Amino acid sequence: KANDLPAAVLAAGSSVGHQVGPAVAATGDGKIRAGWAVGYKSPIALYERTFDSTGKPLDVQPRQLSATSEGPLRLVATANNGWLAAWLEPEVQLGTGTLLARHLRLQSFDAADQPGSVQELAVLGPGQPYSGLATAAAAMPGVGAAVLLATGTTDTADTADIVRLACVDAGGSKVGLAVVADAPAKARRGLELRVMQAGDGSRSYWALWSESSAKSYSAKGEDIWLRTFDASCTPLGPAAVLVAGVDSGATSIQMSAPVLAGSQLGSAALVWNRREEAAVKGYTLQMAPLDAKGTLGPATTIDGPWSFEVVSHALLNSNGGLTVALTGLGLGGGTKVATAANLTSGLTRYMLGKSQYKIALASLPNGVPVLMYAMGTATPFPGKTDSSDVYIQILPAP
Image (tube, rainbow, N blue to C red; front, side):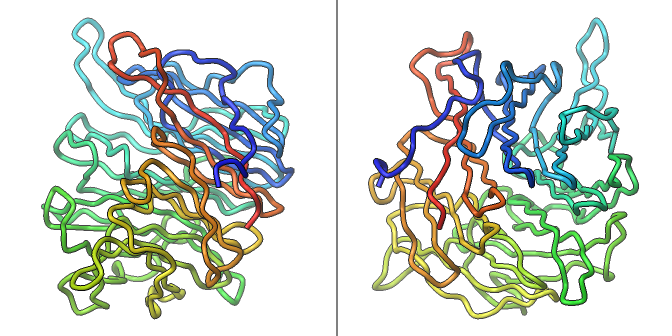
């Protein structure tokens, strides 16, 4: 159904450098805040540009957020149509270039794009490289926001050992920093952070991650953990909750690439891939409700089987519809995005192409999904064998 999609918009307006790491947020006034990085190694420049709900740029030129970052960039919508940006900034020794520390930083902006001061949320030692796949951010409108970050003890691209949560108030000032998980010899990844609202109106941050005792993805699947925090990063409960496990006392499910699709009052939808055996080969897309206590409900198959296709992102849109991004080799290869009007209806699939990677999703106030992705270009960035541009794609409402 690729022809059913409107044309994608080049976020930067032109092919400048090696554009990667898309980030997107949709504010309450219907504006799209699009962010990306330029460069493939530190120092990496970070940019943001504002678009209307149709993908028309409202800024003549992109705004530079940082010229010396290490990435990754995360954007989050806040109260009163504001937004914030979070990223990592390296500190190096002059002359030698030796890495001394990494700084987790955040900057807030109001509806008129007037910036607040840059806040330092955490300082990480040089032996704690970040995992580019293990970062997330979320906001409690009118209360504050939080950034979830995983770091490791070895410079590995997709695994990490230590997970931290940093919280700021509505003005962007730091109010707390917590260690979410730090048991040794664990590979943690696939971090998700959401704001959940219980039936009594109280709100909390839900930090969700997958975990394995191995430093690579397990063919059997991984354990899924959940921990909740208040607005100041204080844990709500003494320990993390094991949502589902491979060989554990919790619900035993073969999980791969789990994502938290979103939230409704006191509940959420967990989406993941399950490797099928016996008569059914390949992978199916599974979904199950997750209640406020971290209890996983019955799983249902919502798509598949595929020869190999992994759910990389999922979003419960503001109108209750579900949007998932699928990447892999199955069904023609490449990256696809699928939408459903609700959690039980069938998926409508849209083929985006075979070169997309690093996807970000957001939902406009009217429920229309907004997708950002990086796509390979024909002209490589100097020093690289490949290069990419970042695009915005407005999707049909589920």
